[in-house]
Length: 299
Ligand SMILES: Nc1ncnc2c1ncn2[C@@H]1O[C@H](COP(=O)(O)OP(=O)(O)OP(=O)(O)O)[C@@H](O)[C@H]1O
Image (cartoon, rainbow, N blue to C red; front, side, top):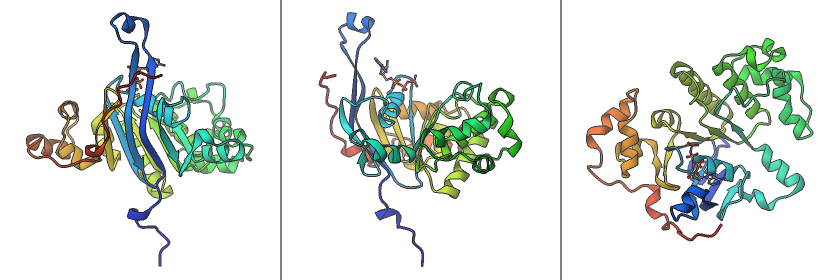
């Protein structure tokens, strides 16, 4: 007998519903008659346990705004973010802190995301300290082991490590409180291709070992295709495509997705196979049932 819940009835970890975020337009845009920037336009998706959803999109498509809104760093104009069934913005005190422990983040640049004045031991102990928990060196060594770095790293400072090693430290820090969901904001964009592959393979191993889920944001569709079971394509604040990775690659429906596929520099066999068949037939994806974009200009 196994206690595993079948995927079809597994509880949702994250549900984002019709998320809208508008900003006041900068002065130059106002002069062109645009008063509001529609950074997110009715974006909806969900992530289940031990799943990876990859979000891909060009600069300015709304990826950072989406992550910042999910992380509670900015309020949505409309729509909801439910994490483990809770709207974090409605929680206070111990309940809010307990929910925060289940969600962590890894940023793009491992050169600026780690405090240069802190040792690795301090960096890995900080999340526990923030939450009033004990930060033991045994726990820090276990975290280093998870990201395949030696225990001797504990006494060293970030500048003594390579970019890939720094990103391993950032991942170890993100795992410090055993979160259920890790948000990864372009985590391999600043790394060489061979180091990118190592970090992607580490993330996949960690997911298998710890059953964590990832929301993985990147510019590069090949990177997302390597790690994500599902992919969402953002364009102009909208999720123009959302579905199983193989399906989105095989049958891209939006011109921007086709552009992304054509731009993949390192051939991915699935992408290469798909290119000649693009758009020969229409497979329904999750975005087919999305409501139209509410083009109101509220802030
Ligand atoms: N604080 C803000 N005030 C005004 N406009 C903003 C603000 N933050 C983002 N925007 C605008 O919202 C849109 C989406 O920006 P966002 O940073 O989310 O895109 P992105 O896909 O993350 O881009 P990149 O890959 O370059 O980081 C852009 O038009 C951007 O100029």
